[in-house]
Each structure stands twice: as C-alpha cells, then as structure tokens.
Image (cartoon, rainbow, N blue to C red):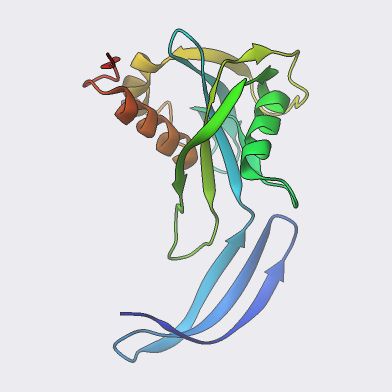
Length: 184
C-alpha cells in the first residue's frame, strides 16, 4: 500500500526548515495536497560515566514555555557526520568530551509529516575539557544516575522526543525494572 506522488513544490524555506506541498494519491485513489516539513538532521549524545550516570542539561524551551532535562543535541552541519556533530554538541553545550562514541539508536520522529533523522549516540569515557562555549543552552548541567531516569520521565521532567528515545534505549540495554544494571 504505497502512496503515489504526482508533484511537489517548496512553499517556504530558511536555514532551519523547508515547507513543501505534495500532490499525493492514497492507495484507495483519494488525492489531496499534503504538507511536508523538511528539517536538518539531529545528532544527540547520551554520555555515561563510570558510575552509570548520564550527562543532562536543564533547559527552557520557549515554544512550550517549559523546563525539562535533555541530552546534548544539535543539528548536523553540512559535511559533518552525525557522530562528529554529537561530539561537537557535547563539547559546546557541556564542556565534556567522550573518549568513545558509538551509535545507540536511530529514529524518524514523525515520518508522516517530516523527514528529519535523529541519530543518538552513546558516549563513554567522558573527559572534562573546559567550560561550555554555548552560553544559551542550559541553566544547569548535571550527571543524573541512570536509575533515576524512569521516575523523571514519569514526572514529565524529561519530555524531549530525542532525549526519550536515547534514554529509553539505555534503560532497555541496562535491563531491570528501574534501569538497574543486569549485566554479568
């Protein structure tokens, strides 16, 4: 059951997003115009220390006028790999650099309306390299025990989709009902 595209046109563009209008036909023959938001790709990093704490930022988002904890994240620049972008964002936003980085999870948060890709990485062996260079990113930067994350999610202290995808993957990897380590 594949939708058929009869045409497309960009109706708005800027460096952050592009809005397109598609002429689509559904498998049942219904044809209409469908808006698509094209966004740059996002790199996210869940940096863990040896105590199984994750580095998070307490930040305000003006769009929702809400405060919440988030993982370091940002847009992938032209010519930059998602992994390099994740490390750059960690350094700029927190002043910490991971020694090792590996893919954790990939997601397409709203594939029916946008084409953005979210690349979430696990960063291990963090080293403090200095103060954050991005002054407008966070009010606080803290190492949060992974065992506290589930409760924070329930209390809506963590609401960012990219952050949730990364942290829930970490909790799945950890095992146990509250993210307790189940490794041997």
